[in-house]
Structure formats: C-alpha cells, structure tokens
Image (tube, rainbow, N blue to C red; front, side, top):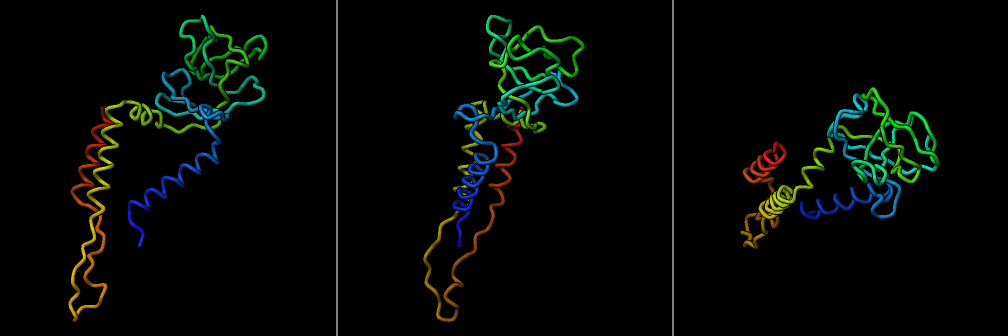
Length: 195
C-alpha cells in the first residue's frame, strides 16, 4: 500500500517534470520562459490585474504581438517589466507599444534586447496566488500548515497481537483522512489568501 506522503512526493515530482518539459526551463535557469504578474488595467480586457502571463523569447517581434519588456535604463521606472502590445517601430530603432486599454502610446521605445518575450498564454488570477507566496510570513504559514497536515494525517502503524479468531490482516486500521486537521488547514489558507 502506498503511503499518502509518498504519493504526495511522487505527485510533486511529476508536476515539476511536466512543468519543466512543457514550459521548458524558465529564464532564471537559462530557458526562454518568463512569468509576468499583471498589475494595472492598461491591458484590459485581454489581461486583467492579478493575471499571470507566461511569455517566451522569440527570434523576432512584430506589430500586434503582446510583449513583456524591461523599461529601458535611464527612463522612469527603469528595469520594471511592462506587458503591452507592439503597435509599430522595429527591433533596432525601438518598438512603439501601447496598452489595449490606453488611448496613447507608451513613452518608452524598447528594443529587441529589452523585450523579455511574447505572450504565450495567461492564467487568470494566478498572479495573486504568486504574490501571496512571495510574502515570507504567508509562505512560512502555508509550509508549516502543510507539514502539520502531513504529520497528523500519516498516523503510525502499531503492532498488535492478532487473535486466533481474526484473520491476520484484520488488526490493522485503514488510513483515514484527517477531519479536524484538514479543516484547520483549509481555514488557515483561506485567511492567508484574504489578506
């Protein structure tokens, strides 16, 4: 019988391998994929505040592409990442960008080197979850709640004497999901998400 902790560890490894194969290594590991948390309303309705945009580095970019770029050095907000649509320009001279919900073009003129990547897909609301995980206190609370859940749900197997009238496997208690522990963990996570 597979223990719940082993099954959970196997599931975590499987999710990591699938993420690594499908999305390829992220930029911080030398790969082409970057994750951008959307803030503001400049790209509504295609991207909303709190969405997570997954962008991938491309060989070239053209008008109509939604791209994430670093604000050029020396400009206000330099090195911040902005995700807007290319409306003109070129990689050499600098692209003209504009938010879908903006009436004017951006003052920045990012070049091909400034562009982090083109939007591949987005996950609505996932950026809020990542923002929560970036808070050290919330991450510590989530990790400790998960550890408590694993400890209290695992149980221990006790060796018992089997009576001669019962079959050999009858003395073991089957694993049961935790009742109170699971509810306390869910309440703690819900309180962390609301803040």
